[in-house]
Image (cartoon, rainbow, N blue to C red; front, side, top):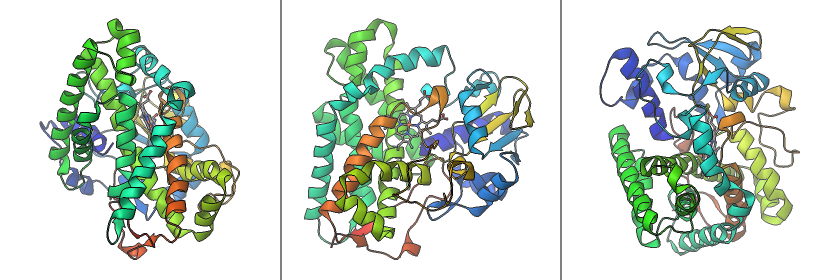
Length: 417
Ligand code: HEM
């Protein structure tokens, strides 16, 4: 979703600044500090200001330029209320102004379009369909660990572990032909290339959409076993090639960077907490609650898609007017004290609490179970294979992303021990 940040900002900029073309992400630095509070962090934690804002009120005004009226929701109950209210809120960018093109995909469609498209995807994400991926996920993880073990010197867990695992799992899920996987990996990486800048990333988006369109066209003639082939087989006449390529692209956007960030930051939690490391290494049953706790704690998708109020309505006593924009802070909601004590610290022995890391309501993450399968397979395998693993740099030297919707660490050099 890195490119999502730039696409959202670009849509807003085009509307309010009358600009054409790309939006320079560097300009994010020109937004008032208070505007960026929900996206800023100190290490893995949201900055304390976010909690202070939530302590004052679960819904507050976010100062935003471009003449937008924007609300920030930080309380858990209020966040759930907004995310559950599909009638009161839209995620369609046309709400900013008629004709404004949004980022596209499931997340930015409203019912009935959203319902129709989501129904095509849902059967591919049932536990029964996902179960076919379990052995492949374990193989993919083991292959990565083998490659890491064979590498000389410190290993970057982001490049060697966190990025390749979800990208290969998505190839498997979609049914990308084996011969194309190296190219697909390259495209997926380019989309999220930190150093490529927004333009390089936008180029990679259209390249990967073009590529997915050719996969769809080929599979129209000979449907494969993956998601693309299954949808063609079962609903081929209900969906155009462009729509199907767009859905596949949405799965890549939704499932790649998010899971990669969780793999890297969850590994960092393990490296920073020897007791958690030992627990996940030695106790099979510890993996599932650890995954739940880090999902809550890290809340890598920091804010939900923007919601546009369709009517005047009230959230937690605050009047929201029709047309207002509502930003739900998932990282704020996940640490709301209504969920339990001491939520500022990751505690893998905690009885899992409710959380909104995957959102809630009609846009709740369709890939939540798949993501959990990957995380439950990957964390224990990592610490079991490399019980002496430790950070190869001082924690203070780690570079995190400055302000992006999906939070992450740029690289995570480790010595495998
Ligand atoms: C740990 C990893 C993941 C996290 C934290 C995450 C988080 C989220 C969140 C918070 C939303 C809802 C946003 C909102 O309501 O505004 C969402 C939606 C979505 N996610 Fe995920 N996600 C993850 C993995 C995945 C995976 C593995 C896939 C697919 C392979 C995926 C595909 C999607 C799609 C297609 C949507 C849009 C659903 C809709 O609008 O109906 N995500 N995700």
